[in-house]
Length: 113
Figure 1 (spheres, rainbow, N blue to C red):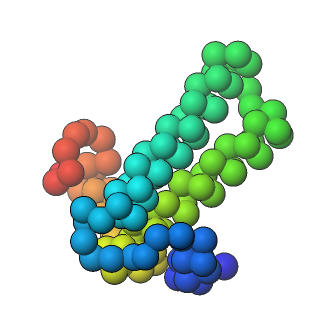
Figure 2: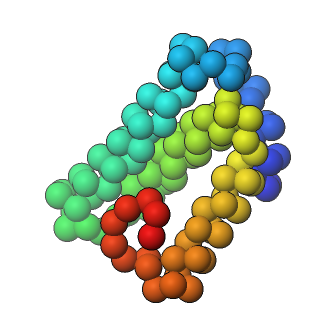
């Protein structure tokens, strides 16, 4: 499945009406959901490091993949509310990373490097 197909199918599960108003409750809920799911992903990894010396079991990996899927859903939704395709988000990210790679700027801080 490609990103645009995923984004189209994922729309079915959004109970709010997508709007261009970034103060709309549906959009704010998606942003907060994204942060929450990313946190849940990080928390699962933290516990693997803390409790299992950083060794993930197959069950751990399955749980992390589920959280990554939830995170992807929220990323897809936020992009859709912004009227941006998920494939454009992915493409722009790779372009940015390639530029940093070519300029030996993968390390460091800041959005513009």
